[in-house]
Length: 265
Image (cartoon, rainbow, N blue to C red; front, side):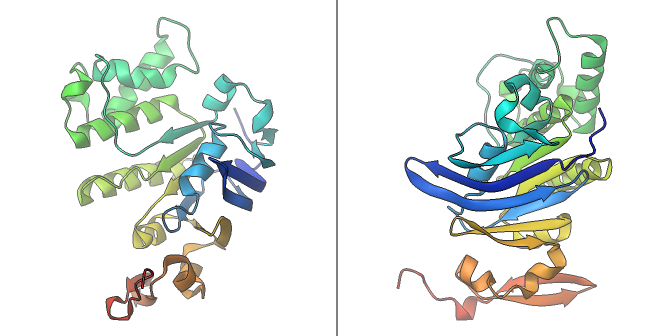
């Protein structure tokens, strides 16, 4: 399917969770092939935003469109063919082989049993994450890093044009983190739209083509990563001084520990 409209179009989004206003008036749109890093302090609404894009929590006001179609008018299967989510590392307690678990990503497309194209997508995804030798293993026996790769393979098998990552690298070691970000960078270069919640600001600056900064329920910044280090509101958003540093043509943000002011004082 060829998509010509914005991949994601968020219009004046307002969301409450447990009667608490979490997002208020958030608007942005993304195009095919963009890598969008979503950053902000804890409680700023990053995960809530992703859940809203999946129609997993109710929207109080505003609208979300996927390729020009209102999310509210799409059936669950139609949503699952357009957008998928990779969460933080989680365990699986059901007795499935790795191959069977990855095949769950084909549920939006198939009826039982798997068709030839479904099997091909599953096998390609297992190879892509380096789990070929574990394909027949019980998924409950995998290590933490292997488990996250299995989740990634499931997302790859689902083959949606939009992929959401919710702190998907937060519990991984550095080599695994780089593997995940490199993999999804390659996918974006092939035309997929990838939106990732990241806690490491410098990784966000290196990986993304665009940054969204959420703070106090609103979108404080929306623009290219090279403009973020000059943003005057970084101190306001994170509660610490972050000084920009130019290194080999890239901008980095360095926390100033000596100037830290405890917010609880």
